[in-house]
Amino acid sequence: MYNVPEAAITMGKNPLTLKRWIKQGFVPAPVYVDCVRGYPQYLAKEVRAICAELQKHEETYDYLHKQHTDTIERIWRRVENARKN
Image (tube, rainbow, N blue to C red; front, side, top):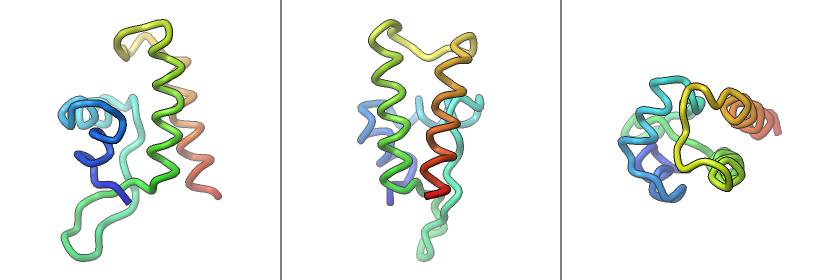
């Protein structure tokens, strides 16, 4: 399990970037919560799913923008699939 800053670092991103992407709806927010501290957390497979889509995206672009709807939709789909399994 990764809290948001840990997930961002694992993805090679600044924690503020991931928080902004969550707020803008580019990336789904974590749905799990740390029982001790109450921090929202991602499962490792959710982080891997986001990383995979970002890696594909970054082959063409240097950033993620609201106009990149195909990537955003793929990220959401992969995270939703990871949550189902």
